[in-house]
Amino acid sequence: MKTAVNVDAYLAEAGQWQPQIKILRAVLLDCGLEETVKWGAPCYAWKGKNVVGLGAFKSYLGLWFHQGALLTDDAGVLINAQEGKTRAQRQWRFQMDDKLDRALIKLYVVEAIDLVERGRAVAPERNKALALPTELTQALARDKVAKEAFKALSPGKQREYAEHIGSAKQEGTRLRRLEKALPMILAGVGLNDKYR
Figure 1 (cartoon, helix red, strand yellow):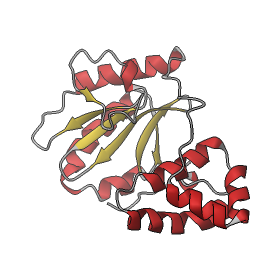
Figure 2: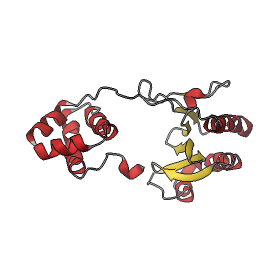
Figure 3: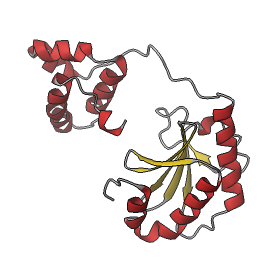
């Protein structure tokens, strides 16, 4: 699916998921959430805070609750899609033949809005040691300008580059990612700045 500029464009590209997305969108808007597009997909916020995102994939349609780890989840529908990596976010996956329970979905959304109202959120991990992949370490050792540019980045941006490059399983992929990252590092740009 192409990166959408607005929710209507996203919906137009959603193919088989259009009917379910229309239902979810109506529930989310009925709860008073602000609709926008972030990370190329619909995102819904309350008072400027992300509450829930919506994403259509080949095998499922997902709702991402940004502070889902704090939700009660009495129905047991939420999963952590990236165990060990994601602390706060939880996902509710729908299959093509699932009947969407609007009332239940609304209960989860209302509870998520209440978390924002009460200022409750999973605190991000701070001061986590930065582990640079070998390829990045070697490249920075060879290029002093790149090394200084990397040091000038915020710790969060440094971590994004380190994790992006280091998470590739094959050396060739790590080297290709490094090659694309170096000009961005030299420009003082974060890996995910275009999505912010």
